[in-house]
Length: 258
Image: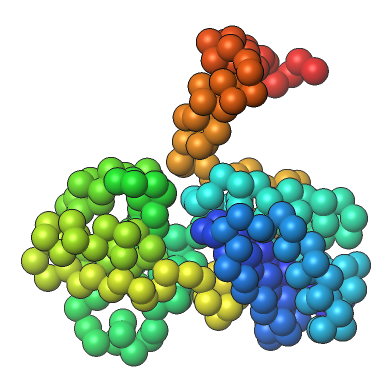
């Protein structure tokens, strides 16, 4: 059977779809849609299938960016992947959004020498970033696990040689003032995944990463709706205290119970 891979990403306000056949890029779509992803993703997929001559049933594997990033974007991409798995029988695998950004660095930049540690910071909310370090490799090799960081903690030792990602531009003044000597800030570089980076990370996944089960999301940032529950409840005419009590009840329900 021909290996046809679909890659989905909606972790940082963009909706991206990538179709690969035997490792070659057939179709890539990239839309800036911070609040319209739900309306765009399905039509984009239909258009990608039509343009590339691929039917949904041809998909053998689906790689999906599972986070860290936007709660709504991650949920949208993973729910779509789960639905397609049920419809097509394709196997699923999770992709780390931060690794994909590191994979977008140009070989020419890395070949300059002295690049031993790359730090990826993506914007979470004011004063907060998602962060992880990587060793330069193909694809970049993760060090530790992705974490939610206060911007002050994003510069912790050991000092990185490069700092990239959307968290750089959003916190540039602070980073310029406090970044360790010798750390190169690259605002605007690798802020969004490239098709080549998405393809490289997806195709490098080990066989054991592909499974016949849904992908677990990598949620690091607290959900905005939870943080704003009091104001949301008040606008609906509900008692904020009761809304919080109901949320606690729901969160404490055993997953084994219906």
